[in-house]
Image 1 (tube, rainbow, N blue to C red):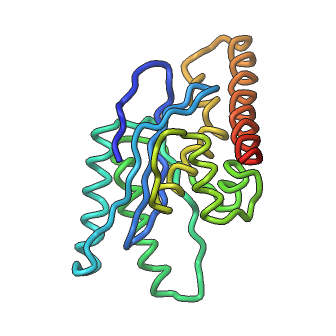
Image 2 (cartoon, rainbow, N blue to C red):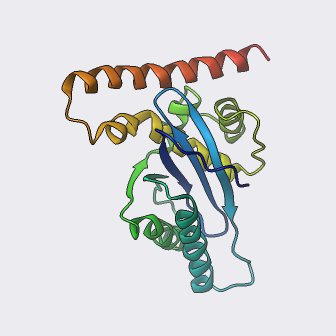
Length: 204
């Protein structure tokens, strides 16, 4: 689902939920007090393709998304090794080709543990996928996120805005006083967004 590309003093963030069968992606703009939805979607290579062909689709599709929307930073959910070695290896390959797409454009990529993402967006570290989808909708109203993969990717982007927005926005300024004031404003802005979303959900 594509949205209008905005301009202004916003940090454009790409969030990724890597996967071999379905890879979610989401893009938001963040200015320290507001988050704006830009675009989201899911890359779904055909099940008829072999492993290498699926990897090519994942990489090329995300490369086009990066070229179209020009994010300045990216984030992805960390992956942990499970008992199925073959599945872990395939997921690792998918992650590699996906993360390569923004890396080729010199876009820094940060990884977050799943519990950290959930706590940042929902407020608790063991939230369900349905809870994540609901809270993403609160942060980004008037959009329809039907895919859990896309919702997870947008949650990653929101988490990244929470933890990295200050450094990204203020990297070019040398005024220490301005940096301190802006840092406080951005932190307070994200906390306010979380509180508003939680209150709205509680009143439903």
